[in-house]
Length: 274
Image (cartoon, rainbow, N blue to C red):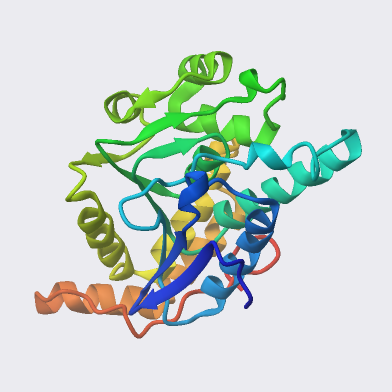
């Protein structure tokens, strides 16, 4: 996989890290960077040894100041080009949000615009106390994408979604934690260690449970909560799985379960166990 120079993917045991390194632009995303995200998602999904993806800025941040607005007069000039650019951004968002493996955003410093969109596409967000959050279409004359808007509403509720999207103002880490935009906030010198400790914990959990939970949560967030044949396929797959056998055996033996040799479940086109 060829990545633009501002992005790098590294694997350490079961945890992969996508690092954003464009410090001169506060890690703002150029078009080529958005285009690379679906490839990153595919590589992580296809790597049987990887269980979790962490996304972060290089060093102590920032996470990302968003899309590179300087490009807008070229790659996004005119209605047709703007629509094509937006589709690339939302393809990147979809690729992250629909991964079967859990994703963790480590947020330090700026997390604004497209950077916040990227973070919201991740399952869990861990921030340090320097983090600043904002979504700024009201400052650009842009109507925010429906899918992205839905993700904001799903995360913080409609009242705070209105505040965030109407004002375009920045929120500090304390407010972000209070409204549910992030899951945890830690001092700047502890946030990375906390995020990776969480990633290691996720990597030790049962693959069938994490993959199934992601699909059932996504379905519930869309308002589809019925217990139907699709959900029963997940239940049956879990009861027949090596994960379940190991979990029960570990409980009986009074030991920690070891799921590390169990492969990640494959899904069919309906996002159910293949």
